[in-house]
Length: 317
Image (tube, rainbow, N blue to C red; front, side):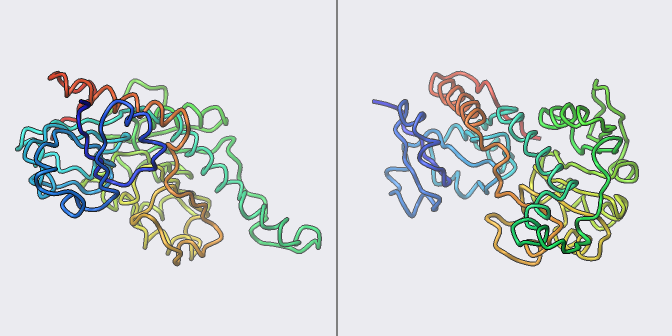
């Protein structure tokens, strides 16, 4: 009989089709496991599949007495309580770098859309303003990408691929991360210094307590009135209220967001602004990205059930 895997969070069935060919999937459909399955059914679960950005704490782990592995679909694992998992001898795995190229593409798409005001231009045609020669202050010429100073916050797999793409647009690239890397880009020793230097800040840092709201009103002010901020990491990194204020009072020129503090994101003050470009957390949502993430999931599950260490293990700390 195939091994059982509990799906803790909501995933489209298409993403689970390949995994279901190898394992018996118990789908909680985004509900708490105890609301869907009996204690007897949960007692035999040894592995779970999770969305790494959603909460998975010790209380959930304790519902699964035989749990030995938490496998995250995707790069993120910030929702998993790693200390609680380690205390219970539960291995945690993810899909590092699997969707890096796809997310980097989205970062550039949002950057270009914000800097070149693509949505404004699209609306200018659709509402008849262009045909009517109607003036629009948002259609004034903007600085392009050539010669722009683009700062990347975080230089992991995604950050490196963003940097390579940005450099192809004849922009200067700088970065700040926890450590200096062997890359051909200017290193800054703090986020404040990076924001003072650049006019486009792309957030590609891993979420955690140390990065919560670190892109705040002060950082946004440092970008300047020609500044743009792009976030393809986690919504928690940016103080969203400060961002709304900065976009409203023209402290910065624009923003491109694929992630939000609360997801799914309902219409609000942010979505009403014309100088922000929005996407529903689909940076890694490409066919290639999903195949690569599934490869990592399958490898982690296969190793776990074979009694071997996870090939893509997350380390607590």
